[in-house]
Image (cartoon, rainbow, N blue to C red; front, side, top):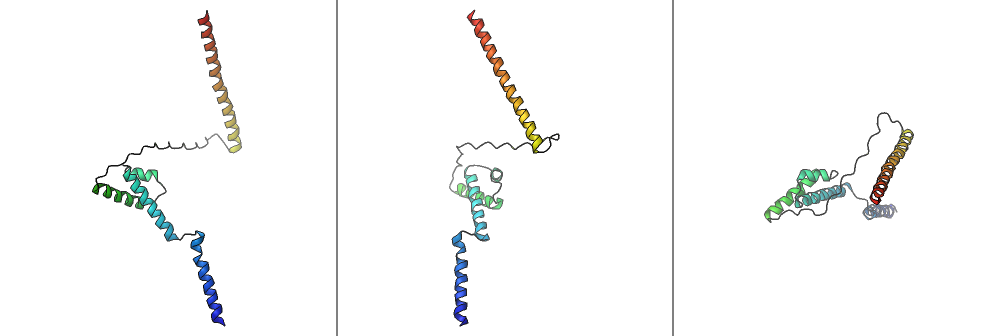
Length: 148
């Protein structure tokens, strides 16, 4: 009687564990293999584009450096054997985004900083409008002189 119950339990556990791959749960080895493959691909692409390995490291900070070097080196060997020239990228890179400035020493919490920012913004708007008015007046004056 215990034998059918035991075999049923084993069958249920085998089906449950086998379903993990179907759910999209990846094991640590699969994640490591993907990370290595991605690093090799990035390194190879950098070499094919004629970039130095240091530039490749800088552009892809989150990638595995050892894998990136391996890919760069393999592509370098391949390009030398087949006498291939690097392909210079045509699409320009996006400029780096500026980092937000840390608050100055005199500024305190968010509430005070927000009030100061609002005040500064209104001064900037007033400063922006002032040159426009003076430019309009000078245009009017020069037009008036030309008419006389």
